[in-house]
Length: 332
Length: 242
Image (cartoon, rainbow over all chains, first blue to last red; front, side, top):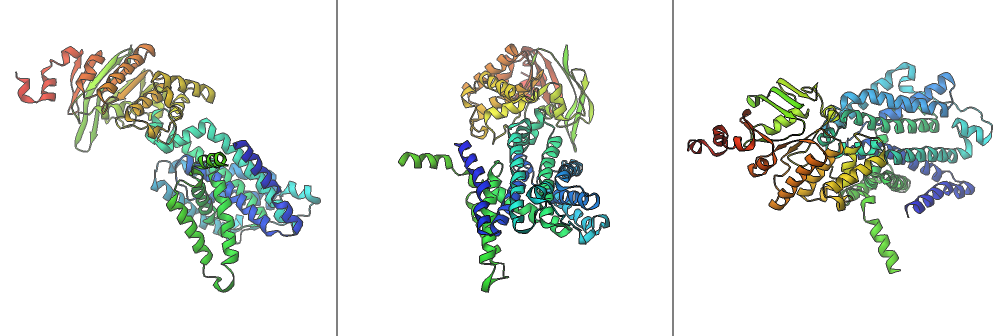
């Protein structure tokens, strides 16, 4: 059952943009790209927020670290994005580990506040540091590439296939993230993260170094955010502080995770697949015409999230789907 | 061989002396009962031994290591495991997963950890409950689960903090049997904190009594129950003089 669903989902994700591309539209490929990007971020955030139970509102710092690292390598040294990616992911994880270790002395709300504080400190650094372009940021020039393969190898798509190219690039990174986290969930790490979430003292009593494993958990989250930052930078062709450090890079994935099912591997995926298209539809329908510019789209969007949070705080995946499916197949 | 030696351990909370110059030794292979009225400082002493608190004075030596200022996870590595007065099962994990977490202390291989956890659930008579979320277990089963999780870390010394309080008489009898089996079959040294005398006396080889943070007696159960200071602590001044 699970395997069939996974196979159907994978085929659907691969085939989805092809008819659209043939029709000659690009908009829905971009929506798909944003769904995959936020699903990937949500799967990453789930490690620290869902499994380890530590509320992290500042992972966008590591999104920026990833984006800037890859952009700097490309602009200053001419290193291609795919080569810059592992460096950017490593830098995000390493910087996160160094910054997070002292924070692990804090618990609950205080830990959450401290993650926000680090994000606030990152903003003036980003907007004043000349080497990384200060408030102007960095522009990523598009080089000429020989055909589709050249574009794919350098993560630089342009023209009518730009949206399609980045959709598949996002699909690859998303799938890699999901596969990694599926393994983490079943490994010693996954057990230790959840033990710390459920009872930190008891976890320490059976030999779990809570500070070390919190650092590992947040660094895994940071690695995913760093990787997503690279992808976004090359899609946007620029990196600047207001964009890379935008609060939405944490709020959207967190909302997707909570709506879909916090602490469940597929929760953020379901959440992103629902919330991102709704947000796009809201802004294209309610955000235009006579009501434009009044934020009606955001109000409706917010209400949907409030309704789910109020009636099913453990997320849509926690609904008894298996039982409903069994009943349906029994009656038919 | 002395497994644990507490040397003049003192723990202060502001103006309150929770432990004052408490000294005791636990030999390998013993079952030691640690008793005393509510607020006598039993749990504080447990917390100091297991690294959740650090004594303000004195020393705690386990298996040749000074652990007075060591963190709990290190002390677990050295071979001390504990259970909690108020149960601390990992509520959102299944019973089996709880024990797997303990077993992962001694192995990184999931299959091995699962096998060991399954065996310990059988040992603690929780065999049929492996897939249940720990939060849904009864109090008696949660306490057994905590014991199984602690045993999974392969301790040399197991500290049970009121493992039998709040249980029905039948459950208590089963818990006493379990403690005996841990001692006999797994060869684990055990220290039990209880304030129920009827449970501790038949179970323990030796009993240590705390009152107002001070050790007032240490000896065989039948000696301790006749000790005048112990009677006074439990029953009050008038009874002691009869």
